[in-house]
Image (cartoon, rainbow, N blue to C red; front, side):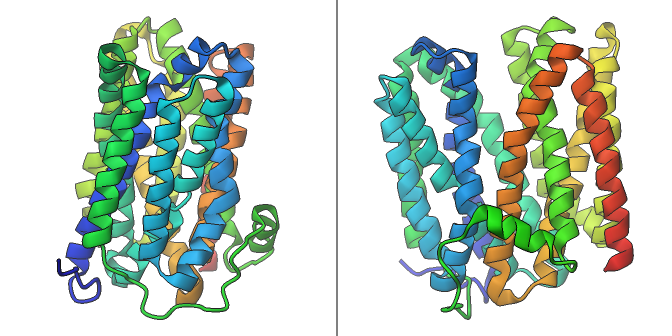
Amino acid sequence: MPRVDSRANPKGALTVLFITVFLDLMGFGLIIPILPIFAKELGANGLVIGVVASSYSFMQFMFSGFWGSLSDRIGRRPVILISIVIMVVAYIVFANAGSIAVLLISRLLSGLGAANLSAAQAFISDVSTPDKKAKNFGLIGAAFGLGFIVGPPLGGWLKDSFGIEWVGYTAAIFSVANFLLAYFILPESLLTKNSTSSLWQNPFGNMVKVLRQSAVNQFFIINIIFITAFSMMQITAAILWHEKFRLSDAEVGYTFAFIGALAVVIQGSLLGKFTARFSEKSLLATGNLLMAVGLLAMPYIPVEWFVPLELLALALIGFGNAFINPMLSSLLSTEVSALQQGFYLGILQSSGSLARLIGPVIGGSLYDVHYTMPYVASFGLMLMSFYFSLKLSKKH
């Protein structure tokens, strides 16, 4: 079967990559909603459930830089293919998990495979013209949103109808289809491979290294602050909606699906219109402000005004997320050598994974103090991120 030429037909290459990322995130979405329940059924307490959940982000933190640098050396396509195979194995292990230890192994493997997002971002950078870069990076967010719309309800239905093992087997089937699609259609995007790229990356050492580089360190500072604030909301939102707004489990699921739908609409279709009219730096700063306002508003909405005011706050968060994530990736990719884009984008992903380890712990602890505290703290963090985004605009 002829492959798409990523340079001659970047739109076709990006379409294939979008489907690849979507199928990858479909498997992720199948597992996430039933993971805490399944862990509890296996005898886990709250602390162990937290360890199992955070193990995914831990592996992303440890290996995102490795996958990014490996893609600089051998190309984006083989790294994506290898990581999909790892995901297949992870889902089969999940389907046969009869103990917490095996469940933990499956999540560690999933995190290892999912750390390949840096290679996908490097692929986008390879095939995008400068004026289309930010819009094309938004495809990752749109694929995530679409996977989050379809995956969670499908995963819940599979568990109720056929048992937990078919959640894992279905995710594995999606990943096999993903591998076949990528193997036969996904092109290689990297024109010049970097044979000197170091394969093993020390994520802590790399984090210190990039934070010491004045030319790029503020990208990573903004990313860590933003994702810490965002993940504080993610870990507490369902509890907030249950306890204050008295939403049922199904209604909480619909609300999360609304967030996913926002990501699809904003990052899949509207983002290109904004980047055509406004600079990436101004959108980044605006995104921080929108995120700050949306996070602060969430716990203070009157119960009877959940619809539409809480949904409006979530829409502000959705626009903020759409303006921050793609802009950071796009701006960073323009500041570094083409031969090191995989490395730096990998460290950017690692910094996000580190923030996802920190944010839930802080958010959960603050929620125990008072239900508004995670959102007030997130507001303060986003103002700090806004300050750094203004410094970034002046500096670059």
